[in-house]
Image (cartoon, rainbow, N blue to C red; front, side, top):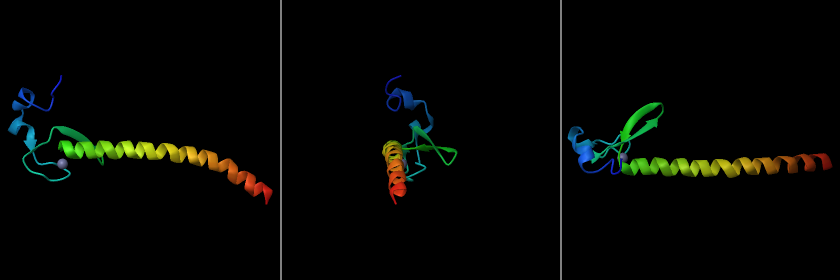
Length: 84
Ligand SMILES: [Zn+2]
């Protein structure tokens, strides 16, 4: 199962797995990664795959501290409102 995107594994694919990336529009690049964008499954190159992966990671990281901050802020607001 290793080297899914290299060597003999992609030789059997049409055009050796190469095509036009749905995101960056590069032509004749390996498009072996399928990504779901707006409910549509598109084939993207490894650069766009990595980009989407990184964005998802950053979003996941952003979402977590924001939720925690909201949880800690909420009681503080309540006490200040009660003091007034
Ligand atoms: Zn791309």
